[in-house]
Image 1: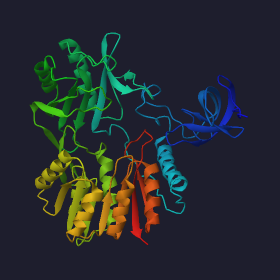
Image 2 (image 1 turned 90 degrees about the vertical axis):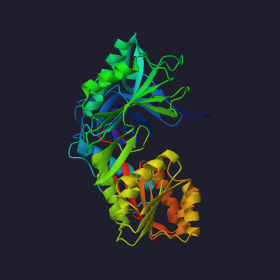
Image 3 (image 1 turned 180 degrees about the vertical axis):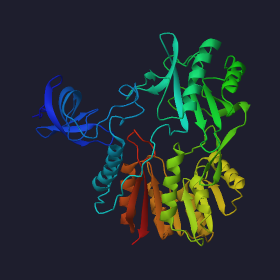
Image 4 (image 1 turned 120 degrees about the vertical axis):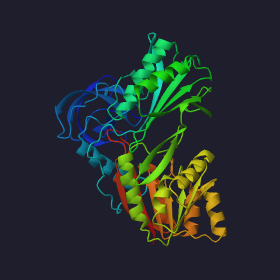
Length: 456
């Protein structure tokens, strides 16, 4: 006999919020049945309305608060309730940092079975606003008007906005100018349903230390009407503008960038620095979006690597060499591997820019290249990994363990896959000594971590 859920759609209940999920929703239980409530905070008592029921859980909408969390605050962004870019503006910043520490603790315990690993307090920002140095903004059309902004939560509907409080102010100004100029110059927004129109996205990159600005126009095809006039308007407005690029993405896809990128005006890169290391950043380069916290994150990775100048370091997922070059000043030699050829070219160029001669970069899969290094007589004292959200392939974890470094420094952007991978490495003899969360993305649910592992 099918078990009935103890709640029904459209019915109202008074609940106590007992927990928060990894995506920031409140969790209440009605007769032991979990109900997820967007916007509710821990220990709040509220009236809710059930809006959807599933076999093992339900979703509720917050109606009235009877007991309010001491950590509740008024979100300063006028579109916070509709925009999907931020999830935690209604939670005080100190509350956000505590929440993120708890997310990491729970992931390690629940997924990795790691209950005794010290998880430190989250390292936050003094001023957690206007921190993003890269904005990827979709362009659309609503009621005949060009709009731009971030997508509504779980939707492809653009929430039109003129200001985003977590991105650099130049990004707001540049985006508003592009919108106005596109309307004036007859540049049509791309329609993903009909696969018609031109302008799909605008990507804006700002370098914190040099104040240099790059604007990337992403279109469906090579034809961009009045491109020269648009570039002139941008150059007149932004004296710090160093690069205007045109990327072509002709595919029906959610992927932002296409394969072809050309210079419209200026240079192909802008330059930024992290802790004295200079980086050339191209339109498609991966580069951490919060420069202030990147210094904190990489500083912790450097501390955990405990380099004395005699060590050989292997860096999997090296990207454009950000961590590799950060470590090279303290290591005997650093070897970086990355599957994206353009990123490896950027890494080599960044090494040349900084006159760093003890860092070598290779194209390929880390699980194949690292054993090849070992066959050449290269022994890793420290291995650093900074994988994408999906974490490391188990074959790479096996390879790392076979190389038997003294220490592994794992930089993670996803506590769930971090927990999984730390558990696998524990089976291979590596003990997680500690984990340090770093708040790279204030007001969102994302949290980065650095974990230190040693061979036990």
